[in-house]
Image (cartoon, rainbow over all chains, first blue to last red):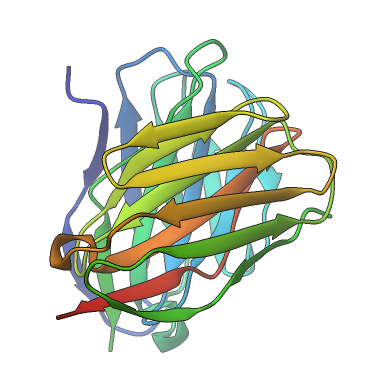
Length: 112
Length: 109
């Protein structure tokens, strides 16, 4: 049981490049989330998906897009990376009946 | 919109003493979570609180929830060095999970 798996763990991008961060959970959870964490700050919600087929904006959605590919997978796309998007990105999932929220190990992204 | 506020943001603890971290949230919440994060690591789940008056304890940590006051507390008993970390609370409302800014705890001898 892997829980929540994020790939890649580390990435360096040049300004203007695009990339997709992948997140998959094997717990049959309905809700999935993407957060960013900047040094000395808490977690800010980028997008979330309450269930398969739905996505909603969080606090800081500008510059990002998401896809809830199926119940297991929720990807985050940066179309044109900017240095301000340098951050650690976390994916999380919550089940309907299982009340815990599980987090992936994070993706450390640097945009130069 | 759900806002979550934690205080204090920084807490210097002396070993052996007791302390409390406070978490206020602005609207009705379905669940209240507490997490621990060590530097460079992901978030480790500590507690999930579901209902008014809920109290959970694990070792030196105890969390409680007062839904009427929209307040959760994390109480640390007899602090030890291993408890040095950043602690976050998060509230869930209508599927949206919002975090507080975190409390960075340092335990000194």
